[in-house]
Image (tube, rainbow, N blue to C red):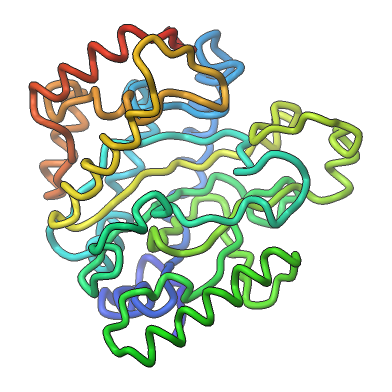
Length: 335
C-alpha cells in the first residue's frame, strides 16, 4: 500500500484506504508549472505590499482577495482526492491561509515543533470516533529538499486513536508514548520527511503528529541564524527566491462541521476585545469566525464551491455579527 498518488490514475478507494491507514496522502502535481508560477508571483506581490510585508501569514479575510490563490482549492484533483478520503459530503472550514517562511517553533531545537492540529480537542469524544474525518490540507509551492525547510515531517499512523478493540487501544497508547519519547530525545525513528514537490497536495488527519522542517545547517549559518538569539516561528531573512509558501485549509465531512466551529469559538475566548495583534500572534479565530458564507465571499468563490458541491462552514448571522464587532475593536496588523 502506498500514500503517494498520481492525480491522473488515482483510485478513490486506494486514497481512502491510505488516508485511513497512514493518516496522510500526497497527490502529485495538482498545480502545473504555469499555475505554480502565477500563484507564487501573486503571493510575492501580496507580501511585498504594505499590509503584509512584515507578516508570516495571509489570513482568511485577505486570502479571499486573491482569486488566483483560492482557485487552487477547487482544482478537480484536489476536490476529488479530499472527497475520496473524507466522504461525499465534503466541507471546507473557512480558516484558509497562506503561511510564509513559518517554521512552527521558536529556536533551533528541531524537536520543539512537533504537535497535532487537534491538540486543543483531546477532551472531546468525537476525536476518538471511528467516523472521524477531518484533515489539514496543504498545497506546497516549493520542493521539500530545497535546503530551506520546504516541507513537513510526520509520524505515519500516529493518528489512530479510534480503535475500539481494547488491546489495540493499549497498543496505540504505548506507540504514542514511544513517539513522544523519540521526539524528546531528538531521534527520527519512525519519522518521515514527506517528499513533497512544488505543486503537490499533502493532506493529513488532524490527529497526526507532525512538524515543520528547519532549513539546513549551512543555510541557517548563511543567514546568521546560528548566532541569532531571538528566533521566532517566522524567518523573514530567508532569501526571496527561496520563500517558503504553503496554502493551508481544513476539510471535513459535513458531520464534523459543528464540532470544529464550537472548538474555534472556545479558542477565540483567548483573543480579548481590544487586543493588539502581533506578527506571530494574530486574532486567528476571531478573524475567520467573523466571516459569513456566502455573504462575505466573492461571487466567484461561492460559484466555484457550488459547482464542486462543497459546503463552506460558517456561523449564523447573529454570531458572525458578534465576531465582526469584536474584530473591529482590535488593533489589527493589516488594518
